[in-house]
Length: 234
Image (tube, rainbow, N blue to C red; front, side, top):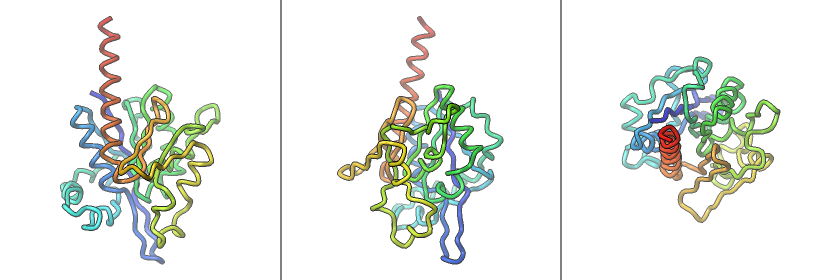
C-alpha cells in the first residue's frame, strides 16, 4: 500500500475584482477515489495548513451537476491539511499537486513545496499534477539546477480553455511556462488526457482528466509495489 501526498492551494482572493479561487474539487476527490480503490492512502497538505479554500465554481451545479464533489467537500474530507513545512517527504511514495487556479498563486513559487517535491523525486517516488497543478513543477529545480520538467512531455490546462474574464487576473500562463521548459501537449481531440513524461513524472490536462489521472497514478503505484515484492521474494 503506497502513501500519496495531495497538495492543495489555500486559496486566493482579489477583492477588487470579486475573484475567489482555490483548489478544484474534482481534481482531488476523483483521483483520491481511484487511489483508494487500489488500497493506497492519501494524506493532505497545503502551504499554510488547516482548511484550504475550495474554488466555489468547482462545486457549483455547472461543474458538479450531481453534487458529487460538493457532498464530499461538505463531509469534511478536505478540512484538515498539514502545513507543507511539517511534511516528512520521505514518508511518501508519490506527491499529487491538485489543480485549480489557486495553485498558480500560492503553490507555484513556494520553496518549501519545491523541497518536498525534490525529496519525493530523489527517493524514486512519483511526482504528479493535474490541470493547473503543474504550476509549482514549472519552477522546481533539481539539486544540479536543472528544471524538473526540462525536456519532458507534459500537459496542463491550455490557454484556449482559460475563461476570458480570468486571464488578466492570473500571474502567468501555465501553457506558456510549460512550453518554455517542457514538451507541452494538449491532445484536444481526447475527452481526457494524461501523459507520463518519465517513469516518475505524470501530468493531467484538465478536470475531465482527473479520474484517468488518478487511475494511472494508482495503477503505477500498485505495479511498483508488486515489483518490489517480487524482488524481495527473489
